[in-house]
Length: 312
Image (cartoon, rainbow, N blue to C red; front, side, top):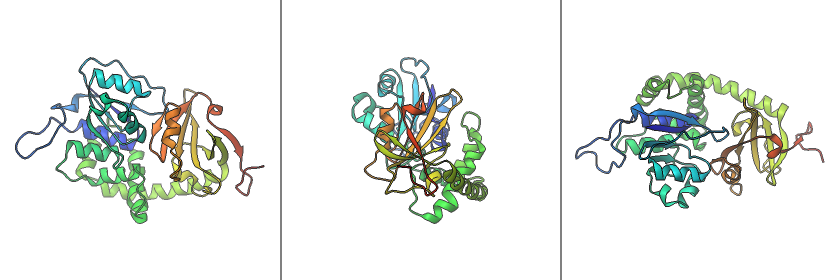
C-alpha cells in the first residue's frame, strides 16, 4: 500500500488527509461514500516532483495505491498503474484531466479529478464529504489554485500560512502529527502571524532578485521573462510587462545537474501546462513545471538592459 504525492504544500496536505482518513465509515448517516474500505495509515508515502528523474517502484497486482496532486509521467505509466493496482486518484492538474479524457482505465479510477479545487480540498471532500473543509486546508488550497480575488486575505492569511508551513517542512512521512493538528485547527493563528513576517521579507527579496537577475528569453516561440531562482510567479511582479512577455520562467539547477523549470502565465491564451506536458512535465493552465538535462534545451536567454528591455 502506498500514497504517491506531489512534493509541495498542496500535495503534502492531500497525502496527510489520505493517510489520516482511516477505514471508510459505515451506517445510515454516511451515504454515498465510495472510497475503498482501507486504512491508509500504514501506507508508504512517496513524494515526487515533475522536475525530478522519478521512477515508480514496482507495484503488485491489486495493490492499493493512492496518487494525489500528481500523475505518473508519461501518461502510459499512469494507465499501467490503473490497470495493475487498485488506484485512488485525486488531482486537479489540467494535464491529468486531459490524460483521463483519453483513457477509460484512468476515468474508472476511484477518487476525484477536478480543476475547481486544489488537491488538498478535493482529498478532504472525498474522504470527509459531510464535514466542512478545515481552515488550514482551505487557505493552503486557495494558495495552490492562486485565488487572489480577496487581496486582504491573500496577503494577511493565505500567503502567510503557505510560507509558515513551508518553513516547518511539513513532510507527511515524518510530520503527520503536525498535519493532524493543522487539520484540527490547532496553532493556525500563530502560524499565520509568524508567516506575515516571512511574507514581508519574501516580497523584499523577490523585488531584489527580479531587478538583479531577470532575463528575457524564448521558450517554444513564446516571449518569456526568466529568473535563475526557485520560486513562483511573485518573483516577477516588479519587472513583468504583459505587453512584452507571454510567460514567466523560474529555472534552477538541481543537485543531479538537471534543470528545473517553473512556468507561469496570467494570459488566457497561454497554456503552460501544455508546454510542460510536451517536455515530460505537467501542471495547471497558468502554473506548471518540467525538468531538462540542459538549460539550452528549453531557454534562449537574453539579458535585460537597465531600462528593463532586452537588447535589440
